[in-house]
Length: 118
Image 1 (cartoon, rainbow, N blue to C red):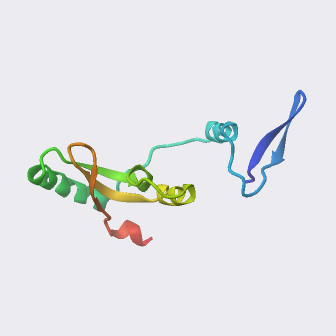
Image 2: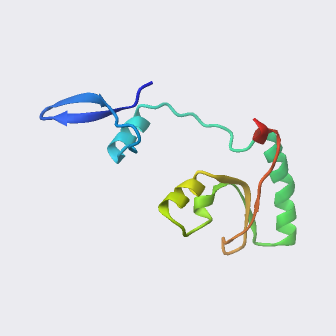
Image 3: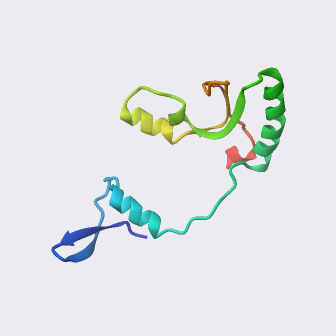
């Protein structure tokens, strides 16, 4: 479908095509979300679930206080660089992130299962 935005002209509102290349503003983002139907989806595939089930007890035994987080955006883990660099890494995720008791990232694990070859 086409991407539209609302343009005001006095009391009347009309739909006009959104300028290509321009990110939607907050009102437009809200409209897009409100008009969408969302449903939940699996966070991990079956292979990743097996890795998590094996990894959690190992981490708990070797490093008490450490936790395993899944599907973490690199923008939540790395700081610095330009806004463009941040936007690029923020769209990337690591499958598993081990954090210490102070919630500091210590180890990222990327699982190369079947889901990564699609």
